Amino acid sequence: SDRMKFTTDFSITHTDNHKNYAYDVGDAYNTENLLSMAYRKMPNVSVYKQDIQGNNTDEFYTILQSSTLDASQRDLLNPVALAYLAKNEEKSIRVIPTFRLQYDILDPYKTTLRYSGYVSFDVDNQVTRRFLPREVTTKTWDNEIANMSYGNDAESLSVYGDQNLTWIPKIGKDQEIMFYGSWQFSTIDPRNQEFMQYGAASSVITNPLLEANNRIFKNNLSQRRTMGLLGRVHYSLLGRYIVDLSIRRDADSRFGSNNRWGNFPAASVKWIVTDEKFMEKAKPWLSELGVRVGYGVVGNTPNRDYLYYSRYNGDWGNYGNNYIDISTVKPTSVKLANL
Image 1: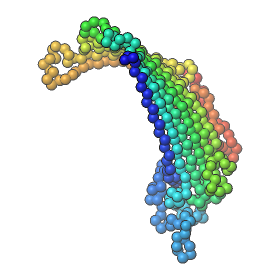
Image 2: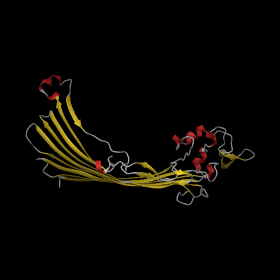
Image 3: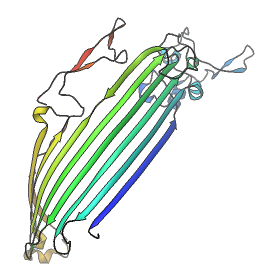
Image 4: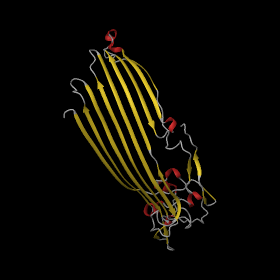
């Protein structure tokens, strides 16, 4: 049918990044920058260990912890050793198919009654693996950066939709009116698991799931749902007197059950002054002049999920959530049912 149009888009993105691992305890704002570490390293510090004749060996040199140098140099790792021995890999694959449909319910040459809408899926998977071998540091084997391995597996599935209906009836000369309705929704389901271990028996053991001392062991799962309904009326008289009225009703699962829905009305009037007869003399130098007055209500959503629940954190070690080597659980937010 000439009144129906169906289109689809499909995109797939795959990345495989092998990045530098610039673990720098003294420069937290440049944790991915080996060059900044090299600039701060003393110029007389050798990159490689040397034999008794002063010849470079094939082993990288790191300042001993027994050195009397300031900690800013003693704890600064060898950037060349990090470039060759440490691992920082990120892989991802993202697939986004989108399906669109447009259909003229009535003959568009007589009157406009059109449906248009789309549904889009977003599948995103990411894997991060890092490893800091014992050979790049002179810390003891039980130190948290000796043979430190890290892993993060994240995946999410999101669905977005927007369905619209537009009606433009013919109401006579010099008048136009349009009725517009829209239904929008989204579902977002992210999850991830994160691991960090240290003190593995060998630098060959880079998998954060194999046996070693646990530093981070956690997983996250969340869900978010949104929905919106929009109604709009647009009226024009003589092409220069314009009135717009709209009402939007939105819902977001980030709000508590008592305030999950919100109403957002808006109204405006516009007068295109340059279309009046008394402005004809100004047209050579004034293309358009209009006056518009409007009023509307808007709102913001919380920046995180589940703030309306009492939440607790049982994460071990990473954020100081331990007491005398005993794991603890502490509250991170109080229940806000009326959020």
